[in-house]
Length: 427
Image (cartoon, rainbow, N blue to C red; front, side, top):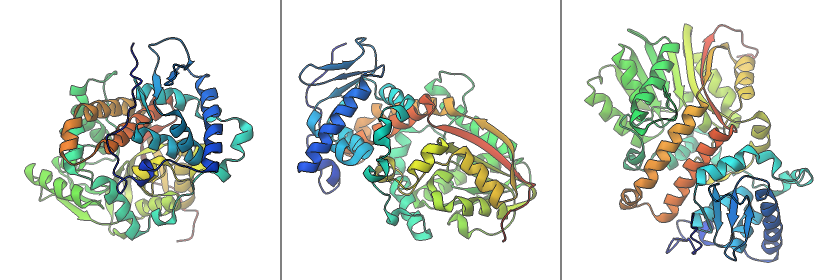
């Protein structure tokens, strides 16, 4: 396999749009921390089944050329970014073209499998001093939550249409076979939605609340069963397209899609559904989120969510940390752990688990298909006004997410609750 060692960097980086990508850390501290980061990175890479190739011909790692290969085009610049800003710097280094890979998802999967082992224990003690703290401006108050959601979901409906399937569903599918075929994605998304509707008991005459509309596929499938659906979103772009799709399906008389914060909803519903929305709620607001679900579900009803999770110890360690994903992809977000979900429901609500199933491998396949489509449609994305730095950013985001599920670092569950317990808090 031939490796392209030419400098891989966008022709221009718009410093107004990407100030921290355009600016390389400088000064004595950046040089020293960069040198330390370089030594640690090379040490870590040598222990993994990957190859790292440098411009001077140095190759670190296994000799097998078929293994995932990372090509470092600007070693000192990458090291300074990582030394100064950790994983944020690593991501910004990819956005700037300081490094590339022949198999970015495979490379990040190997890093993900050994994530907790790559930094020596003696240095892990200093983690609280080195990480970047999450800005308070991203905390999900009602006003800020709408800004945070808009920053991602209001980018462009046309952008999402380039890599999503015809259902415009932006969450894990549920495949009947793996590895998944791209042509099976739309049906797998419908299968995922139908399973969630089934576990929530949605049928003729059901009164349904959906928290987080997406682009309307769940609304359509629930209404087609004869349910009446109240769906809420904070994305004006999603609301607009979801309403169009519901109308085109001839179901507008059964579906209301409202621009509304989940905390402001009133009423009583037979089924309360929320697909991959808890990740945007924020650590401080998880108890309120579940209390709201508990308040809105009728006696005898069901709450069904789809939630991405991370290990509990990593969640606790990173809950106040500012990450690359928060800075560039999902401001204000944090993945919960299964322990956090159980703790929040059992301590604060009547909600008790009645069904739970993992879709981890399905999400890895879903993300692979999205990433491959996104890369194939590079020119179409550029025609929408998104530059090369944005393209690298989103390719890294999709690959990073895929790697998280393939490595087992991340999981995703369809989780169904019934209001059968007793609250442990005073309402």
